[in-house]
Length: 300
Ligand code: ATR
Image: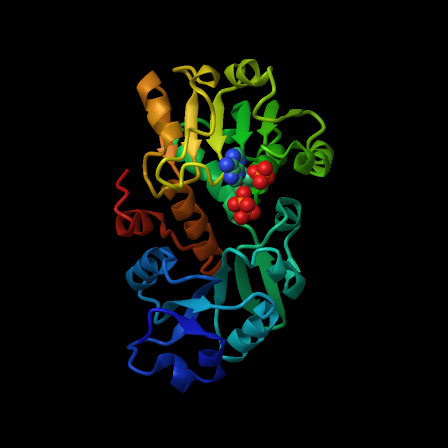
Protein backbone atom coordinates (compact mmCIF):
# COMPACT_ATOMS: atom_id res chain seq x y z
CA UNK A 1 0.00 0.00 0.00
CA UNK A 2 1.32 3.45 -0.91
CA UNK A 3 0.95 6.78 0.85
CA UNK A 4 0.44 8.46 -2.55
CA UNK A 5 -0.79 6.94 -5.82
CA UNK A 6 -0.45 8.34 -9.35
CA UNK A 7 -2.28 8.20 -12.68
CA UNK A 8 -0.21 5.14 -13.63
CA UNK A 9 -1.60 3.23 -10.63
CA UNK A 10 -5.10 3.79 -12.03
CA UNK A 11 -4.31 1.42 -14.90
CA UNK A 12 -5.54 -1.63 -13.06
CA UNK A 13 -7.05 -2.90 -9.82
CA UNK A 14 -3.90 -5.01 -9.30
CA UNK A 15 -1.64 -1.92 -9.21
CA UNK A 16 -4.06 -0.08 -6.96
CA UNK A 17 -5.03 -2.70 -4.45
CA UNK A 18 -1.96 -4.91 -4.01
CA UNK A 19 -1.33 -5.42 -0.32
CA UNK A 20 -4.53 -3.63 0.69
CA UNK A 21 -7.41 -5.16 2.62
CA UNK A 22 -10.09 -3.09 0.88
CA UNK A 23 -10.52 -1.79 -2.68
CA UNK A 24 -9.67 1.88 -3.34
CA UNK A 25 -13.00 3.47 -4.30
CA UNK A 26 -12.55 7.07 -3.14
CA UNK A 27 -9.66 9.51 -3.38
CA UNK A 28 -8.46 13.04 -2.99
CA UNK A 29 -6.70 14.38 -6.07
CA UNK A 30 -4.23 17.26 -5.92
CA UNK A 31 -0.64 18.23 -6.68
CA UNK A 32 1.15 17.95 -4.30
CA UNK A 33 -1.05 15.74 -2.12
CA UNK A 34 1.25 13.85 0.28
CA UNK A 35 0.20 15.91 3.30
CA UNK A 36 -3.57 15.82 2.78
CA UNK A 37 -5.48 15.05 5.97
CA UNK A 38 -8.58 13.98 4.04
CA UNK A 39 -7.86 10.21 4.10
CA UNK A 40 -7.75 10.26 7.90
CA UNK A 41 -11.27 11.53 8.35
CA UNK A 42 -12.85 9.81 5.35
CA UNK A 43 -11.35 6.40 6.13
CA UNK A 44 -12.59 6.72 9.71
CA UNK A 45 -16.09 7.47 8.43
CA UNK A 46 -15.99 4.60 5.90
CA UNK A 47 -14.82 2.14 8.56
CA UNK A 48 -17.42 3.32 11.08
CA UNK A 49 -20.17 2.86 8.49
CA UNK A 50 -18.87 -0.61 7.55
CA UNK A 51 -18.29 0.37 3.92
CA UNK A 52 -15.81 -1.87 2.12
CA UNK A 53 -13.71 0.88 0.53
CA UNK A 54 -10.37 2.62 0.83
CA UNK A 55 -9.85 6.39 0.47
CA UNK A 56 -6.49 7.16 -1.15
CA UNK A 57 -4.28 10.14 -2.05
CA UNK A 58 -3.80 10.61 -5.82
CA UNK A 59 -1.11 12.93 -7.13
CA UNK A 60 -2.35 14.12 -10.52
CA UNK A 61 -0.39 16.61 -12.62
CA UNK A 62 -2.19 19.70 -13.94
CA UNK A 63 -3.79 19.01 -17.32
CA UNK A 64 -4.56 15.36 -16.53
CA UNK A 65 -7.66 15.67 -14.36
CA UNK A 66 -10.02 14.49 -17.13
CA UNK A 67 -7.90 11.41 -17.68
CA UNK A 68 -7.87 10.69 -13.94
CA UNK A 69 -11.68 10.89 -13.82
CA UNK A 70 -12.03 8.49 -16.79
CA UNK A 71 -9.74 5.95 -15.19
CA UNK A 72 -11.44 6.20 -11.81
CA UNK A 73 -14.82 5.68 -13.49
CA UNK A 74 -13.51 2.66 -15.36
CA UNK A 75 -12.29 1.15 -12.06
CA UNK A 76 -15.66 1.68 -10.38
CA UNK A 77 -14.74 4.54 -8.04
CA UNK A 78 -17.63 6.12 -6.13
CA UNK A 79 -16.17 9.62 -6.31
CA UNK A 80 -13.31 11.84 -5.22
CA UNK A 81 -12.38 15.08 -3.57
CA UNK A 82 -10.55 17.69 -5.62
CA UNK A 83 -8.03 20.02 -4.08
CA UNK A 84 -5.41 22.59 -5.11
CA UNK A 85 -4.60 23.18 -7.96
CA UNK A 86 -7.41 21.21 -9.68
CA UNK A 87 -10.64 22.84 -8.48
CA UNK A 88 -11.07 24.84 -11.71
CA UNK A 89 -9.76 22.23 -14.14
CA UNK A 90 -12.22 19.70 -12.69
CA UNK A 91 -15.15 21.88 -13.79
CA UNK A 92 -14.38 21.15 -17.45
CA UNK A 93 -14.73 17.40 -16.87
CA UNK A 94 -18.02 17.07 -15.01
CA UNK A 95 -21.61 18.25 -14.87
CA UNK A 96 -21.30 21.16 -12.47
CA UNK A 97 -24.02 21.77 -9.87
CA UNK A 98 -25.36 25.37 -10.13
CA UNK A 99 -24.09 26.27 -6.62
CA UNK A 100 -20.61 25.03 -7.53
CA UNK A 101 -20.85 27.08 -10.72
CA UNK A 102 -21.61 30.17 -8.64
CA UNK A 103 -18.84 29.32 -6.17
CA UNK A 104 -16.45 29.08 -9.13
CA UNK A 105 -14.91 25.72 -8.21
CA UNK A 106 -15.60 22.02 -7.75
CA UNK A 107 -14.19 20.09 -4.78
CA UNK A 108 -16.34 16.94 -4.81
CA UNK A 109 -17.01 14.50 -7.65
CA UNK A 110 -19.60 11.72 -7.73
CA UNK A 111 -19.37 9.10 -10.47
CA UNK A 112 -22.82 7.96 -11.55
CA UNK A 113 -23.73 5.35 -14.16
CA UNK A 114 -24.24 7.96 -16.89
CA UNK A 115 -22.69 11.14 -15.47
CA UNK A 116 -19.75 12.59 -13.56
CA UNK A 117 -21.25 15.17 -11.20
CA UNK A 118 -19.34 18.04 -9.61
CA UNK A 119 -20.24 19.78 -6.35
CA UNK A 120 -18.69 22.36 -4.05
CA UNK A 121 -18.85 21.69 -0.32
CA UNK A 122 -16.30 24.37 0.67
CA UNK A 123 -18.87 27.18 0.75
CA UNK A 124 -21.59 25.23 2.61
CA UNK A 125 -18.89 23.67 4.82
CA UNK A 126 -17.79 27.15 5.88
CA UNK A 127 -21.39 28.12 6.70
CA UNK A 128 -21.77 25.00 8.87
CA UNK A 129 -18.42 25.61 10.57
CA UNK A 130 -19.48 29.13 11.56
CA UNK A 131 -22.81 27.89 12.86
CA UNK A 132 -21.16 25.05 14.81
CA UNK A 133 -18.28 27.13 16.21
CA UNK A 134 -20.15 30.35 17.01
CA UNK A 135 -23.79 29.22 17.31
CA UNK A 136 -24.84 31.89 14.83
CA UNK A 137 -26.17 31.24 11.32
CA UNK A 138 -23.87 32.76 8.71
CA UNK A 139 -26.84 34.46 7.03
CA UNK A 140 -27.42 36.56 10.18
CA UNK A 141 -23.90 38.02 10.17
CA UNK A 142 -22.23 40.99 8.50
CA UNK A 143 -18.97 39.59 7.17
CA UNK A 144 -15.43 40.79 6.36
CA UNK A 145 -13.47 38.51 4.00
CA UNK A 146 -9.78 39.45 4.27
CA UNK A 147 -7.73 38.16 1.33
CA UNK A 148 -10.70 37.72 -0.97
CA UNK A 149 -8.54 37.30 -4.11
CA UNK A 150 -7.83 33.55 -3.80
CA UNK A 151 -9.97 30.45 -4.18
CA UNK A 152 -11.01 30.22 -0.53
CA UNK A 153 -11.95 33.91 -0.51
CA UNK A 154 -14.09 33.48 -3.59
CA UNK A 155 -15.92 30.46 -2.16
CA UNK A 156 -16.62 32.15 1.18
CA UNK A 157 -17.65 35.53 -0.27
CA UNK A 158 -19.96 33.72 -2.70
CA UNK A 159 -21.47 31.56 0.04
CA UNK A 160 -22.24 34.74 2.01
CA UNK A 161 -24.11 36.09 -1.03
CA UNK A 162 -25.91 32.79 -1.74
CA UNK A 163 -27.22 33.11 1.83
CA UNK A 164 -28.04 36.80 1.36
CA UNK A 165 -26.02 38.35 4.21
CA UNK A 166 -26.85 42.01 4.85
CA UNK A 167 -23.29 43.24 4.45
CA UNK A 168 -20.08 41.87 2.94
CA UNK A 169 -16.73 43.66 3.02
CA UNK A 170 -14.16 42.07 0.71
CA UNK A 171 -10.57 43.15 1.29
CA UNK A 172 -7.60 42.34 -0.91
CA UNK A 173 -3.99 43.43 -1.42
CA UNK A 174 -4.67 43.62 -5.16
CA UNK A 175 -7.92 45.56 -5.37
CA UNK A 176 -8.20 45.15 -9.16
CA UNK A 177 -8.79 41.41 -8.72
CA UNK A 178 -12.05 42.09 -6.91
CA UNK A 179 -13.80 44.17 -9.61
CA UNK A 180 -15.30 41.36 -11.73
CA UNK A 181 -15.98 39.24 -8.63
CA UNK A 182 -17.94 41.99 -6.92
CA UNK A 183 -20.04 42.36 -10.07
CA UNK A 184 -20.96 38.66 -9.94
CA UNK A 185 -21.63 38.80 -6.19
CA UNK A 186 -24.04 41.74 -6.66
CA UNK A 187 -25.98 39.75 -9.25
CA UNK A 188 -26.23 36.82 -6.86
CA UNK A 189 -27.48 38.90 -3.96
CA UNK A 190 -28.82 42.35 -4.85
CA UNK A 191 -29.88 42.95 -1.21
CA UNK A 192 -26.32 42.54 0.14
CA UNK A 193 -24.33 45.73 0.70
CA UNK A 194 -20.97 44.81 -0.85
CA UNK A 195 -17.88 46.93 -0.23
CA UNK A 196 -14.47 46.20 -1.80
CA UNK A 197 -11.37 47.69 -0.14
CA UNK A 198 -7.59 47.46 -0.26
CA UNK A 199 -5.77 46.88 3.04
CA UNK A 200 -4.48 50.49 3.01
CA UNK A 201 -7.92 52.05 2.59
CA UNK A 202 -8.52 54.63 5.37
CA UNK A 203 -12.09 53.29 5.77
CA UNK A 204 -10.92 49.73 6.53
CA UNK A 205 -11.07 49.87 10.34
CA UNK A 206 -14.47 51.58 10.39
CA UNK A 207 -15.90 49.04 7.92
CA UNK A 208 -14.55 46.11 9.94
CA UNK A 209 -15.92 47.50 13.18
CA UNK A 210 -19.40 47.64 11.65
CA UNK A 211 -19.34 43.89 10.90
CA UNK A 212 -19.86 40.79 13.09
CA UNK A 213 -17.60 38.13 11.54
CA UNK A 214 -14.00 38.55 10.35
CA UNK A 215 -12.60 35.79 8.12
CA UNK A 216 -9.02 35.38 6.92
CA UNK A 217 -9.01 33.60 3.56
CA UNK A 218 -5.48 34.67 2.61
CA UNK A 219 -2.31 32.66 3.03
CA UNK A 220 -0.99 35.26 5.50
CA UNK A 221 -0.44 33.45 8.80
CA UNK A 222 0.75 30.16 7.31
CA UNK A 223 4.43 30.99 7.59
CA UNK A 224 6.32 31.68 10.77
CA UNK A 225 6.91 35.41 11.17
CA UNK A 226 3.83 36.38 9.12
CA UNK A 227 1.93 39.39 10.48
CA UNK A 228 -1.77 39.45 11.33
CA UNK A 229 -3.74 39.98 8.10
CA UNK A 230 -5.60 42.86 9.84
CA UNK A 231 -4.31 45.47 12.29
CA UNK A 232 -5.65 45.51 15.86
CA UNK A 233 -7.60 48.71 15.07
CA UNK A 234 -9.89 46.60 12.84
CA UNK A 235 -10.90 44.28 15.68
CA UNK A 236 -13.18 44.58 18.72
CA UNK A 237 -14.07 42.04 21.39
CA UNK A 238 -17.57 41.47 20.00
CA UNK A 239 -16.14 40.15 16.72
CA UNK A 240 -16.33 36.49 15.79
CA UNK A 241 -13.00 35.75 14.11
CA UNK A 242 -12.43 32.78 11.79
CA UNK A 243 -9.14 31.87 10.12
CA UNK A 244 -9.32 29.37 7.25
CA UNK A 245 -5.73 28.38 8.12
CA UNK A 246 -5.49 25.51 10.63
CA UNK A 247 -1.75 24.93 10.62
CA UNK A 248 -0.60 26.72 12.77
CA UNK A 249 -3.79 26.40 14.84
CA UNK A 250 -3.40 29.92 16.24
CA UNK A 251 -2.40 32.40 13.53
CA UNK A 252 -1.30 35.96 14.36
CA UNK A 253 -4.84 37.14 13.52
CA UNK A 254 -6.37 34.65 15.97
CA UNK A 255 -3.75 35.49 18.63
CA UNK A 256 -4.61 39.19 18.35
CA UNK A 257 -8.34 38.40 18.44
CA UNK A 258 -7.93 36.08 21.45
CA UNK A 259 -6.05 38.87 23.23
CA UNK A 260 -9.03 41.18 22.72
CA UNK A 261 -11.44 38.56 24.05
CA UNK A 262 -13.05 37.67 20.70
CA UNK A 263 -14.53 34.24 19.99
CA UNK A 264 -12.23 32.58 17.47
CA UNK A 265 -12.00 29.39 15.41
CA UNK A 266 -9.60 27.99 12.83
CA UNK A 267 -10.05 26.22 9.50
CA UNK A 268 -10.06 22.70 10.91
CA UNK A 269 -13.82 22.90 11.41
CA UNK A 270 -14.30 23.97 7.77
CA UNK A 271 -12.09 21.09 6.60
CA UNK A 272 -14.18 18.62 8.58
CA UNK A 273 -17.56 20.10 7.58
CA UNK A 274 -16.71 20.16 3.87
CA UNK A 275 -15.56 16.55 4.22
CA UNK A 276 -18.76 15.47 5.92
CA UNK A 277 -20.84 17.12 3.17
CA UNK A 278 -18.74 15.43 0.47
CA UNK A 279 -19.27 12.06 2.20
CA UNK A 280 -23.02 12.67 2.13
CA UNK A 281 -22.88 13.29 -1.64
CA UNK A 282 -21.41 9.79 -1.98
CA UNK A 283 -23.53 8.14 0.73
CA UNK A 284 -26.84 9.99 1.10
CA UNK A 285 -28.26 9.66 4.60
CA UNK A 286 -24.87 9.00 6.22
CA UNK A 287 -23.99 10.98 9.37
CA UNK A 288 -20.17 11.02 9.37
CA UNK A 289 -19.58 14.28 11.27
CA UNK A 290 -18.96 12.95 14.79
CA UNK A 291 -16.59 10.25 13.58
CA UNK A 292 -14.72 12.74 11.40
CA UNK A 293 -14.36 15.18 14.29
CA UNK A 294 -13.00 12.44 16.51
CA UNK A 295 -10.58 11.30 13.78
CA UNK A 296 -9.27 14.85 13.52
CA UNK A 297 -9.17 15.11 17.32
CA UNK A 298 -11.74 17.88 17.42
CA UNK A 299 -14.21 17.07 20.12
CA UNK A 300 -17.18 19.33 20.38
P1 ATR B 1 -5.36 30.62 -4.02
O1 ATR B 1 -6.16 30.51 -2.74
O2 ATR B 1 -6.26 30.72 -5.20
O3 ATR B 1 -4.28 29.59 -4.15
P2 ATR B 1 -3.31 32.56 -3.28
O4 ATR B 1 -2.38 33.01 -4.36
O5 ATR B 1 -2.82 31.60 -2.27
O6 ATR B 1 -4.64 32.04 -3.98
O7 ATR B 1 -3.81 33.87 -2.52
C1 ATR B 1 -4.82 33.83 -1.58
C2 ATR B 1 -5.07 35.22 -1.06
O8 ATR B 1 -3.97 35.58 -0.19
C3 ATR B 1 -5.14 36.34 -2.11
O9 ATR B 1 -6.21 37.16 -1.75
C4 ATR B 1 -3.82 37.06 -1.97
O10 ATR B 1 -3.86 38.43 -2.30
P3 ATR B 1 -3.64 38.93 -3.83
O11 ATR B 1 -4.92 38.63 -4.54
O12 ATR B 1 -3.40 40.39 -3.72
O13 ATR B 1 -2.48 38.16 -4.37
C5 ATR B 1 -3.60 36.91 -0.48
N1 ATR B 1 -2.23 37.16 -0.07
C6 ATR B 1 -1.17 36.35 -0.26
N2 ATR B 1 -0.05 36.91 0.29
C7 ATR B 1 -0.44 38.10 0.81
C8 ATR B 1 0.24 39.14 1.53
N3 ATR B 1 1.56 39.05 1.80
N4 ATR B 1 -0.47 40.20 1.93
C9 ATR B 1 -1.80 40.28 1.68
N5 ATR B 1 -2.49 39.34 1.01
C10 ATR B 1 -1.83 38.26 0.59
